[in-house]
Image (spheres, rainbow, N blue to C red):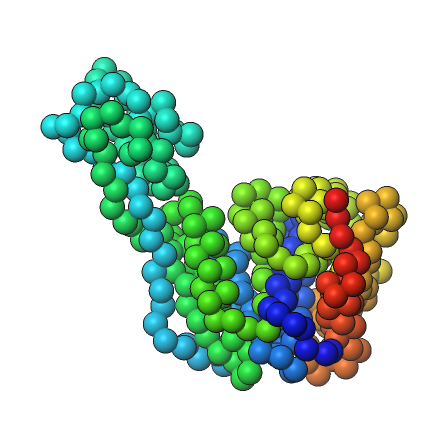
Length: 297
């Protein structure tokens, strides 16, 4: 694989969990690190598990807290008008009988309530909602975003991890994205040069892949599909890809040994045929980015 002119950001995503997304992301990052300065970024912040593949990884520097500004009330300045509750799109503020209550765990930190309060009765203060930590395994850097237990503001942690990863200025960035097509997945793939959608030949995966394709099309992102566990089921992933004009950039055959290794978080670096497929997938991604193939409207 030849050097890319700038940082290449590859987002590895899936319509559903359990397709082998994290395993593929880890091996793509390893393939990149063999030639270029590469970072694996775990954006599945509710349940990050990329580091399970790299038990020998060592921490680099300190963990960085992710903070979010949330409003708090100055009671003596509040008239109880309810403007803040009307402004909140997330149900974090309730105004009843002239009394205002703020649930800071529901707040997304948008600042609308503070801006619109006519009495300046709301002020902001930072609270910690998660952290990012940087690890290193050989030549590969690994950045993990992790949401605090009990918190629900995954997108804040995802964006913080993306910002920190970009500041490290690597040649290749591989993102392990949350499964599904909700807000966390949308934030995780946003800004990627190429999205790899991992699917398996099952009815559930076929259905959810269609939704994932709609997500990347909606963002105008270049994308391709890797069919994992090829031969395991009979759902026609390839027909869906043809219908949606999306290329299949890799087919990874189902082998029970691979499945058990993946379930236990073990890399398949001694599996020559598998690593060759990973190299081929990475080369196709680079070619697609350089030639504008896989552009979605």
